[in-house]
Length: 144
Image 1 (cartoon, helix red, strand yellow):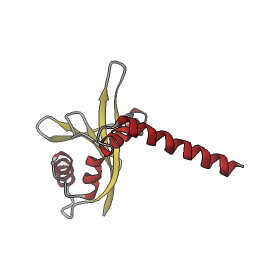
Image 2 (cartoon, helix red, strand yellow):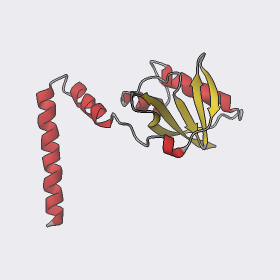
Image 3 (spheres, rainbow, N blue to C red):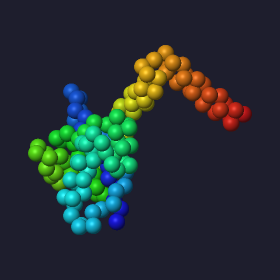
Image 4 (spheres, helix red, strand yellow):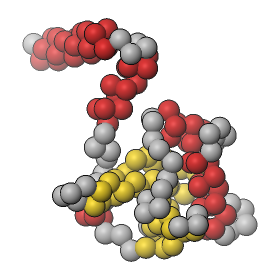
């Protein structure tokens, strides 16, 4: 049986303290049927330096950090928060409390380009502007 998992990272600032969805993926529920096995596997894959599952490799490619105390995972309709000692506790979470996407998306996009261009920001910006100009030209041609 496959279940949907959302990794929720806690963003805390002077103005707010809310979880945001860092990544969403599907995993197979363990054959033993225990949620603790799934939570243990999630924590192991998300904190290791050499992940083995495709979703955890993608998680690292998107520059997400390892889960910390206070972060949560949403498995189906149930939320689990990471507690001290790598323990999981079931928590009540309201839909309006969760930010649906990462507030750092554009930064990660630029970080990808920076890594791709080996820190050459000028080349990164020129390519970014060229891509955006091509998008605008394509939109204008499609509208005409």
